[in-house]
Length: 448
Image (cartoon, rainbow, N blue to C red):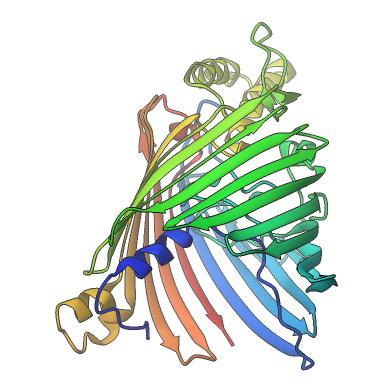
């Protein structure tokens, strides 16, 4: 069962705000005993498909079954997170179904590191060395300061994120933390897109984190062989007992992304250098005693295609994908060129201007606030709704989660989740060109 919340005070608001900012992996205290913590998840996904300007749907729908088994291993100062990730245990597409034979099974080392301390005179330094997931980002829908191996935000299905190679030294003082870090993002085992490969970086940097009153600050400077230098900053400020504001920004000297030739219709989209780039996010978090939590965010990413670039890509895709004769090799090549424009969806953000509205409801907090002693199983249900808007072209993505905490004994737990995502809005919007029109995902996950 969730812990009862009788009121929402200032410290609770600080906790809500701080949850938007995730730092480096927490130190693991030395433990002479070997310990194992297991997590498992099974996900069934069904999606309704549609034709787009870039590709024709491969059937009216697709179905897949995926599974993930994680084990966290700790021994003394060593910590590892290992996974068996299976995709496509069951596949149903184009009227054909298949069990097992097309499955992609991977054994992944998601994390493996030594976490300890180094005494230098009177100064104690926290040391992290190995493969680690490090995220200094601030935000819910997007995190500009997730610098090293960016992770997907709020996926509806299963994702097995991996860490980067990391060596970091951290020192804590009365105001906050200093961190010096070196990373190598090429340590991943999973297949990557051409953009991900081009963005693999090796670099060094420094971070300052400080808590001043009720406000958290970050300042980051980092240099690598891809971005050639970046500067980042963030802040989280608690205004009163229920409202907190967060924001972050990032400037980088160089960037890479998918680009197409403006004056040549018959050149495929490819990864190119894009020059300097800028990202910024601002958001507001509101929570009340009745368990409602609302987040509103706006962010901008100059690396994504602009409205005019998407319009040109859609026009070219529609022109190139008109294939009256599939036996004509020239026309077939044109269809492949049209497909290449779909690579624009692989950018960190599909469009430059983004608005996110998030709502979730802690039913048990509401019951406690209203003096209802026993809500039964309803107190373990958590509804969540995300609304993502593309204000320039009218695209909309709506995602609904319904989570039920079925079992929670402390040592063991089982959650059941149903998620639905709808990609809609203007027919000429970028989101409307994604082949999945809507999808429903059933997840069951637990710990033991």
